[in-house]
Structures are given as structure tokens and as C-alpha cells.
Image (cartoon, rainbow, N blue to C red):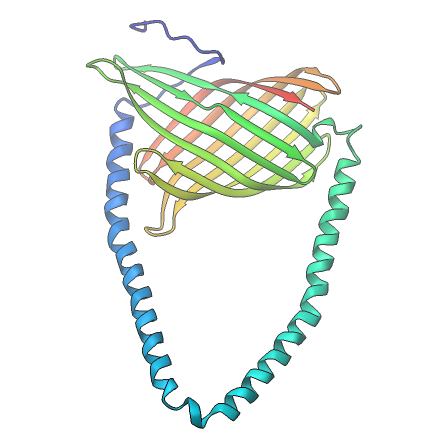
Length: 290
């Protein structure tokens, strides 16, 4: 039994987490921050050395510039011609690329009658509640997603809490924003999207890049299965800060032209700093306006 009642607007999920998970994650985060500092300093020193060498090179060249004006002018003129050729052949490629995106966007939005959620606003929530060795753990992930044709943007809060035996809770939080996702396949039965964005780790006050891939399949009108992979990587230390895999099945009891609701069961596996690993299980809820 829990020591005190805890209330959530969203559905609670019973999860099994190892006790003192929070301490393990914080230790690994501290190690990673220590490893980042010399790498960042070396990167800064390299940039300073490059700028110094560049300035020295420009100074030495200035003394001989008067004897090579004709040659420089000729080289510059050749470079301008070369750039002109690049623009001549490169601009049509870019123009063709953006026209293809525009055409596909119109095609996707034209499927609104058969695929109502092709342009939609989705609110999702799951809350994971666990009890292990007289310590309570809570994982809460409210989420917001906007779909518009071939584009999607997705933001959520990742809030992991562990009960403090002396009272209160320890907390470990992220803000994850998939700034731009591309819907590679988007029909009434199959969806496939990939994206990239930023994740802010509040404990270390550090921003990381986060990449995602999502796949869903509807074998029946009221049933949907889904698989999601997320990865936060530290490019300085080459460490995977957080790897997340979500596997789920949803029932769709309400699916109207302007509104849908999904209730599902989710299994999630988390790995922090390539060391701390745990699973959560439980229901989730999604409400969509389309």
C-alpha cells in the first residue's frame, strides 16, 4: 500500500522500477558532464588556434598583396564565374525539390476525407506509478503533437520522480521537442515518420539533439499497434544519454470526423547513459481533434 493517495488527471500506470534509479541516473549524468568539460575546452582552443593562424596568414599575405593583385583579381573573377555556374545548375535542383514537397503536401492534405488525422491536434498522457522496497516511483509524460500533411511537430515533458524516504520526491526531468518530423507514409492503415529535435535535461541544464522514428499499423478499424524509438546522444562524449523504445496497442472507441479518442496499453524500455536500464508498463490515453 502507498503511504499517501496520489491523484492524476491522466490514467495511472503500474510500473516496476529499480529502487534508487534516480541516484544511478544522476551519478552517470555527473560523470558525463565531467567528460564534456575537457572536450569542450579542447574544441574552444582549437578554434582559437585556427583563428590565430588565420590572422597570421592574412598578415603575412598582406605584405605581398601589392605584387599579386593581377593574379588575385584573375582568381577572384574565375571564382565568380564558378559560383555563377553553381547557381545556374543548383537553383533548379532546389526549385524542383521544393516543388516536389509542395506537390506532396497538397496530395496529403487532399486525403482529409479518407485520413481525417492528416491535419490534427493530439493530446496524449500516460503516468507510471510504481512501488518497490518501500520506495515510490512515478513517471509522467504529457505530450502534444500537431500533424499537418507531411509535417509533424511533437513536444512532451518527461518527468521521473522517486520517493525520498525522508519525505517528498526526487525529480529528474526532460523537455523533449521534435521540432520537425516527416510523415513518409501517411494513410488510414500505416504511418511512418522520422524526425529530429532538441531535448533539455534539467538536472545538468544541458541541451542535446534527439532523433525519433515512429511506425503504426491498424489491422482493424478500432485497433492500432505502434512502435516508437527515441535517442538522445551527446556529440561531445559520444554517449547515448537516453534511449527509449515504446511498444503499444490502442483501442479506438471513438473515431469521428472531427474527434477521436484512443485508450491503449504501453510497454516502454529506457536506458540512461548506457548504464541504467528499466521497463514500465501500463495504459495511456490520446485525444485528437481533426
